[in-house]
Image 1 (tube, rainbow, N blue to C red):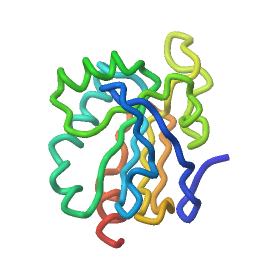
Image 2: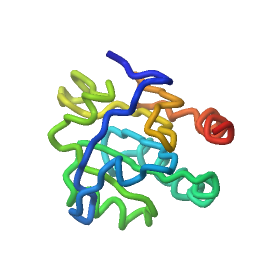
Image 3: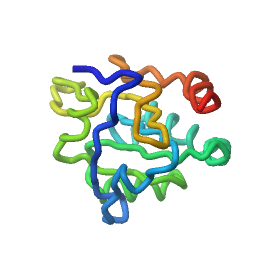
Image 4: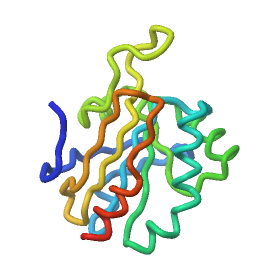
Length: 155
């Protein structure tokens, strides 16, 4: 079942690219943009992550942190973070539990790969409630960054 605005955000703890555990509950009292992306080192995913990197100060100015999640291993994410100078946590959902909980998992992706995160964006407010939810069926599409910003500006 798809999550929507007004739902309580499912809590999670995942390992970041530095292998440290990161929990959504660590961000209580702040807004969080939770992004799911299919695969590190691919064109659209790189463009999306670099867009967020370049806009991070704007989001931080709105009491907002960014967490990006994929099914890549922490080691792959560490190389991706380093190569693109990403300035926010990249979290490994290698077991796919969090992607599944957020309704952000392809049954079958390209090349017959199963269990890859769908490109998705969620705005979770300071009390853990989803205020914006967008799950894209096409991995070639980017989230609506304008709608994300407008949602945050209204909080």
